[in-house]
Image 1 (tube, rainbow, N blue to C red):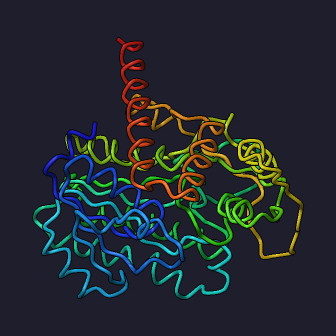
Image 2 (image 1 turned 90 degrees about the horizontal axis):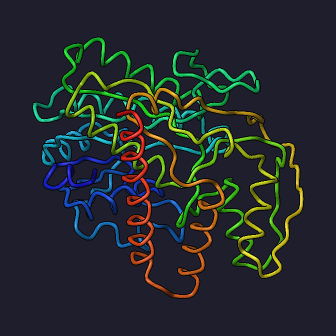
Length: 361
């Protein structure tokens, strides 16, 4: 699949973030001409710096709320393919800074689509949103793409608005299918190099590295967990397929099968077993702001449209996260283990799609 990206001009917003750094690594390895636009990393350490992500690409530190700077960068890049990952992505932070969250997540999307609307080069666009865009009734059934968008908290709601902005631009300006535009509603991702606050696996990693117990806020919250490479390869697949056939454009849930929708406490137990070294966990309910306690995605549309299925189960995802973290802790090359895991995932991804196509034929 990644052969498609060789020589393609690709614009990535949010390239300094966890998912953005992994995505840029994949694209650079594939021979794409990559331009990234994002704020500077907001954690120390961070994957963008550890992996020397700026090397081999054009990296622009800028704010998606600054239309003029964004537009200049966009014009210079003259992209064919756009991935929009820039966001304020933390639920608890959105309660602390709701205005900034809406400005980044909503007006940042408007600004990017204004750049796309004024462009003659763009043929494929993917806006990465979240599984939290749906009006969540805390039900056992998985959410489908045609259900109501109305996230509860400022982060989730602002990403619902980002979806609506995308739909509006498609109807108003891209009705002929050029560029082809999709949104991808991904579940919770884990993987090496995520150092964000208020996320359970980074919390596990910090505790493991510091030799302290892991604090679990909501042990019974159920989420669709997946390794970061799972949605990234799905994003690349969607962008490629709609580039070649704009009829493939749409709104897609990118989540694991039901077997990998875990309670937070069970996820931590799996991390403890994989890490070893006497690591322990303890419950620490902190009476924080509302966060959904139950959420699952229906991924059938993605499967049926693209002959796709998840490649790595949660056990593998946790093991890969631990492997990356211990390699970094021990001073091994970060890019080496990233490339090793990318190659392993691409092999599984290509084989899985071949097997599905062979079954259908």
